[in-house]
Image (tube, rainbow, N blue to C red):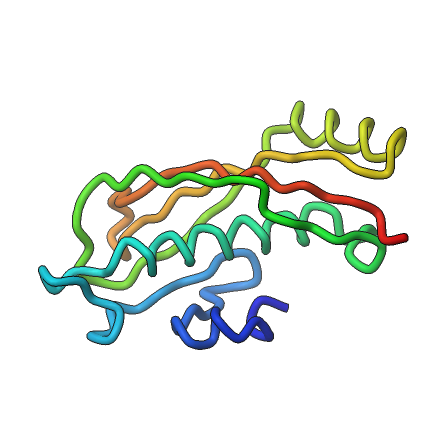
Length: 136
């Protein structure tokens, strides 16, 4: 699904495996210092959070419209190599989301994302809040 998003294709985000995305240090994505641009890293993290959302609630995929409400990423160090994204949603958050969604037909859910280098050094961490509404 993520590979069908035009901007994701433009940036060059690829699947590392079924649950994780990766981004190579392409010269077209570098900033003035020769490291991966913060915008490219943010795009990777935001896309990973959306992938996690789809994987977490597969039965809702065709029934809902998910929209990013807000997101933030704390950058820890410059990146000069490929980056891998990982995402998670706390169990309590999953339960809260489903309860609210089943009651109201809409709810928010927070997805945490960690970006690591190939040697597993954390280069950025953040949270992305998705608003999910049942299609009308």
